[in-house]
Image (cartoon, rainbow, N blue to C red; front, side):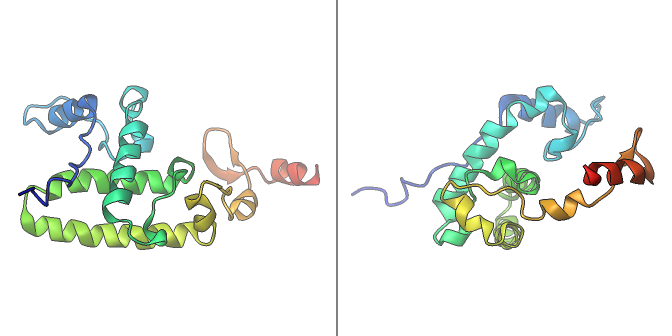
Length: 169
């Protein structure tokens, strides 16, 4: 008799460098005061380097394991949707923590459902094209371009004259 559960794939293991970073960060006598590993934009170049490959394997695992409907598929161009990268990283790390306790696993599945709903809201109709390998640039790009440029140094006062000159062409 064959084991009917033998085909269940394990969740992708985070890169060794990230696991070492997490261990160093959470040690009681830690001197590491860096960002959370799911805060992709705050990670050092050394820590961010292994993340895309791991998160891509997480996306593939989530798609094989949970994506029974087309709208549940994380598109292959997820890296071009910046918000998805942050969400996928948080979901992946949350899963690692959640599977230490059965009750937390149920909550993680609810988080996954909310992730899928947010992903579909963000992707909108463009998600259908992205899921079949035809990525569309951000539909809201024209609205983002309307924001005036910031002054050098990140000052709050925008450089309206530069923005007007850019649009005047």
